[in-house]
Length: 255
Image 1 (cartoon, rainbow, N blue to C red):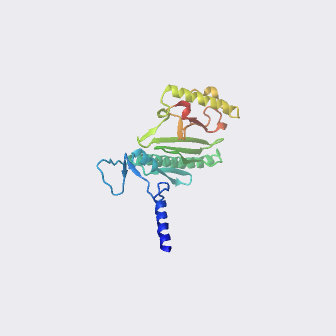
Image 2: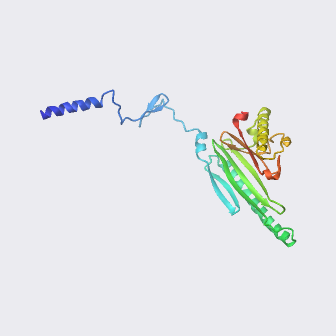
Image 3: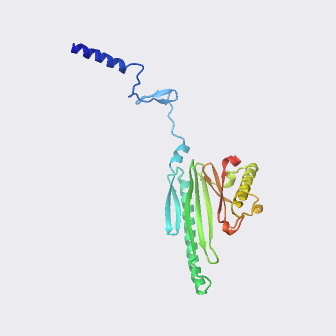
């Protein structure tokens, strides 16, 4: 009797396990190559093997490392670019900027000593350099370099220079590469004009009538998610108290 029960139980287990109503938990997912399933160890002349697109590879592998010449001078160095010539060019550029800042700082310190002797200044002269990575995805790299300088007088100066690169095309970009025609430029100008008016209502002091147009070859900008950030310097289209001004312009405004 016990033997008969064991047989019945085994039959029931077999029926449940192989019933079409019960999912096979241990089944492996299929991997398809076009219209054909790929199986480990399989070889087929009908399957074409392709390397991943270079734009996908590069987008995953851009690294920016902080370097310093002094406590007040930091600069970026990039690595893992597929284009090593571009990598060297970018790194040499920022190292050169850091060395220029170091020399300018040295000269200001010497000028400070002379001015102190003559009783013309009691402040500390300097030029500082720091950077930020504003955007680093989709093979676009934007780096902003901020300089602070004091060389006497009522106040110092701060300004920002931006460097935008298309890493695949090995090209440094300007605004004219983003805003590509007069129609787009007109839309951007209208948007910024309206933003200035809106900010004035909240206490800013933009000289709206002085703003005519963004300069596509000279104005500073960097990429952001969904658009670009256009930068106007101190005392540009407004008093010094306005500081540096940033206008984020979504692509939807002009594209």
